[in-house]
Amino acid sequence: MILVCADNLNGDVRGGAAMEDLLQIRYSRICFTLEFPEETHLPVHKVSMLRGGIGEMLLQGNCIGNRDCEKCSFAEECVVQQIYYHKLKIVPDYVQKKESLGYVYECGDTRTNYHKGDTLRFRMTLFGNVIVHFPAVLQAVYWLGMHGVGKEKARFRLIEIENHHGDKVLNRDEVCLAYLRPEMIGEYAAERMNRGRQVVKMRFVSPLTLKHEGRFLKEFQEQALVYSIYRRIYLLNCMEGNVMERKCPFQGAFEITDQRVRPVKIPRYSGTHDRVICLEGIEGEMEIRVEETFVPFLYAGELTHIGKNTSMGFGQYVVG
Image (cartoon, rainbow, N blue to C red; front, side, top):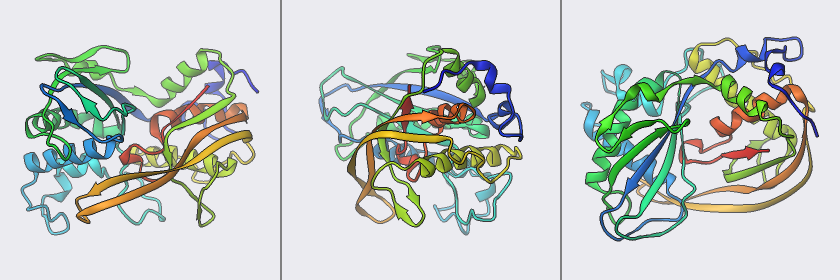
């Protein structure tokens, strides 16, 4: 077990770049509050539903290429592409397809029945230049409320949006974009470290889907987690155009002393395949020992999520 202070954030990473340079990734964490005007039913796991609904509204409001992205001459400037599949400024040779790196969704509300006047809160974190497209996301959520979300097309009113400090970006009908207040992931890590708490536990609050050495994890593995956290930070730096060493320098920086793990399957409807697909992963918690230099990356991963299907809300964890 270790106790860390914020001063360590400025130290070198095993002789490499300063930690503060590696975490110069912009983010804005935004919480939406929806209110239902009538009784409705929603699935237990809501992120896929929200992501798909907002994506559909973005397409309806912005696509002029008949949704054929490969042939569309406007694809370079497409708002939907800029939000959901933002390009990397530095493209590693192993990246062969579009990466959904510019955002993550979070929703821990597992209720299925909602009465008139009930509210639902979900969070969306935007990274890098995707933050500037927040007004399009806001409009899409507003349209989704009129169109309806989920199988029952549940309508809602968007009544409030807060940033991660609790400032009102939207309060009823008033919008203040200045309250998006983009910050650096390094600032988040420093603030978490300033609390002076020991890092002894790590808990996945949404499924982790992660392949290591050719196999999907059935239990938590130290090096797989370290590589995945580092890879996520590396790719976000690539999106920002920041140069970072590709090879992870944190071998042996993380030890699991005990774990409780369970398999999870989450059904979601895929518009692409026009059928229900089950996404699989593992959830649970572990007791850990962490090398001091890796702690800021561990905190950063709380924001970024890790593994596959992060755009569906997967890979969210908390440490403490």
